[in-house]
Image (cartoon, rainbow, N blue to C red; front, side, top):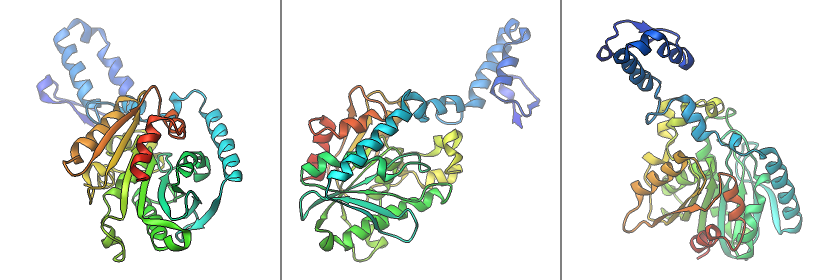
Length: 333
């Protein structure tokens, strides 16, 4: 039931009116003829349909549902899968190393330099789709630069709650830290990178109290972070079709939002978005940096020129791209 505010001169309530119904009412001759009433209803309609930062459900869907903006998305996935399969065949990689008890708690470790840094890569898919096998190609330029790359899987919603996923990623990092000697990686140089939902999980790792999670681990267990097109405030997704998997309410969305969870150390971050992303993705990245950048905590913003949400990953996989060069400068030093 929608109660009309008295300031618009209405004393009754509207029940079961959706967006199209309200538009139809607004267009009736009585509203057009009586411009003061029509204007009042128009202003009311804009306010009552707004769900987040003045945006209604349709606008939020446009801002955050991105696969529909990639006309060749299915072909893109096929191309990535073929590229990844070929890369795994020719790489020094340990596949499906188990870091936890759940079925999807496995990771692939692409070996760069023995004893070198390790980059943990977290895939996207709005926490409800995707697989590490689609993103092996991201590891290639980092491996060639001497960085070991761990591409991880995690349980997808709705088979778990959204709040169960960050603890799984922590388990992966903890497993790598404890097994660093056997894996021949430098556990003092663990960095985290993720794309989209993986960007969200990257920021969650930056906000982790590692000694509270595992007393053996140091507070500065994470050397650097690179969230790419991350979701730092989850509330707007509650009002979109994206929420079919996570099934968040507003309270859970706030609890799992890195925008409200400060990084626990001054580890540097490179916060990336595509130059052709929707305004909301850029705003979220800007807001995260503005809130948590300090004199001692370096947090840089970089937009990948002329690339959308998916194309930016292809640029990341190019060793001569600016986004790769800025990333390797953080995780490889």
